[in-house]
Picture: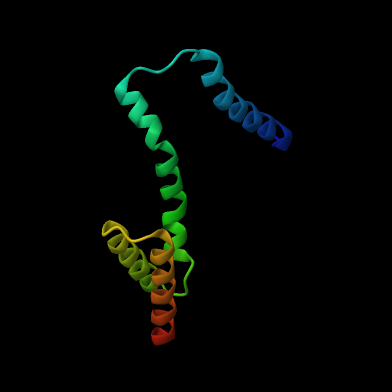
Length: 102
């Protein structure tokens, strides 16, 4: 059986279209369920975290410097530092660790 790439592209386009259109057509009124509302509230944050986390570890020459920057960033964010300050300190930590290791 020969694989046809156009069938795959059509299936992907149809699934993507349905995922975006079905909620708009099926849900016409306000969502009142607290669990569903809280779930939908956190979906963008979880999606961003899932896309960002592997990149943090793989963007540096050494996984250890990426992991150290992640831990430093989490600690600084936990204590309420601004996003700019956290990013600046994490970049400096990676630079320093890469300079020492390499």
